[in-house]
Length: 431
Image (cartoon, rainbow, N blue to C red):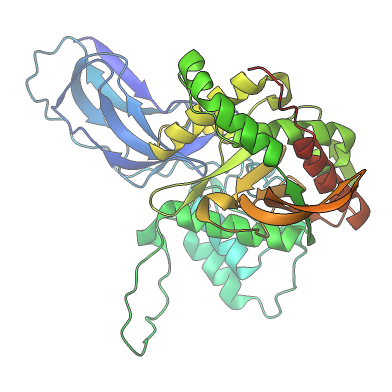
């Protein structure tokens, strides 16, 4: 028998563990080359794990719902088997969760991955600690009864019950989980009764993550929003003239998004603090321009793929990247490292027919731009011969920024600069 070990793959620089959502194969099943064996989830994205070899499953080492560290063996295969079933029992449920560093989308202050170098906390324990306001300092003092002194669910619940006066922890000391707690392990509150004709639907995994990220952002950043109305008539006319030629040359649709991103990158150079983040009392100026583009999924959830080094791409390159990421986002085929590392984000609320919006900052970024629907309006046009009224294509830009480091003068000037670059678009430009 030729034994092959299928391991939990690495899905991004900040990803250290993943949850097994579903086994698509069972012990004794034949697996073809590149056939998907299991579905996994990180705090960023769901993924499928294909087999790099053909063979027969001889052992599944973890159960659905288990959190597994990257690099751990999750299944064993016989690559020489003829396809006969092998009666090997599924390994007992094993807790291997090690706390990963909190990702950029969740919180500006990294979560502690281990204390003293060798004490690990399960996502369940961290989730209870966060909900009960238990600081990391307090968590370190709890005597664990688990293996190797690990703090168990029973330990932390007993601590919460017995502590007489819970101090209000500072935001930076709160423990933040990297995975959602498995449903069967959550302490279920008594069911509430609702009057009237209602339907109760539990949030899916992604919606829970989005909800937590949005609350974290509001708790972290002092949000302020500035608005500017931009005349994008030149862009509309140029795109209408060029979109057919663009499709013939490059096989791609020419949308407004790459043009917006191009203008944003120019404005970020003018106002570098907008392309930064905060670490305590330090401002981290980001030299890379990694632009996130919020994309709505068919199920109503939101995901933000990132265009790395967007300032180094021309309009054709940006268009290809925008279309590729948007298409794969809708198909659920994004990789984990394609939705991390963003330094600034743009959200096109105009696709929903909205004139403007007040977007929530994606941590640890300090600003986000929303582009509204482009509408024809009568506008006063100033000329040397006097003022006149004309029909123009107008669009609102909404810029939400972190008032901790960006004052209104800079936040407002930045969005005005983006509008200036859009209004100055060269209609004689070639593709």
